[in-house]
Length: 79
Image (cartoon, rainbow, N blue to C red; front, side, top):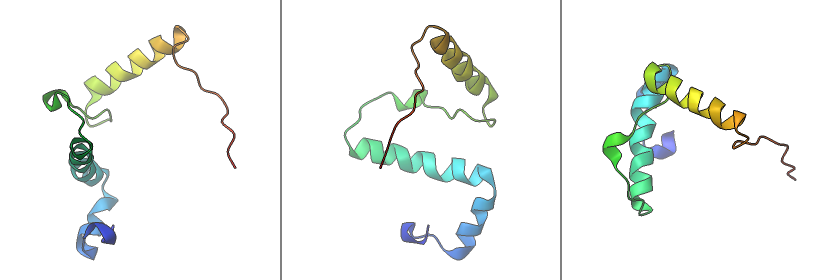
């Protein structure tokens, strides 16, 4: 985190999970924009307990896709 330019006092704030959600999503969006990704950013949301409506929505959609065999989880061998 120091490589991101954060001071020790700023780093200690990351003991709270909300600090991660405040800090990293905007940074990730800027990185995606730098890659040239074009999308409707007004529709972005975080799927965690912080936003239970969308968290539940994504969970239900994921279960439905699993039931339709659209999501596969398998072993992936790596060296």
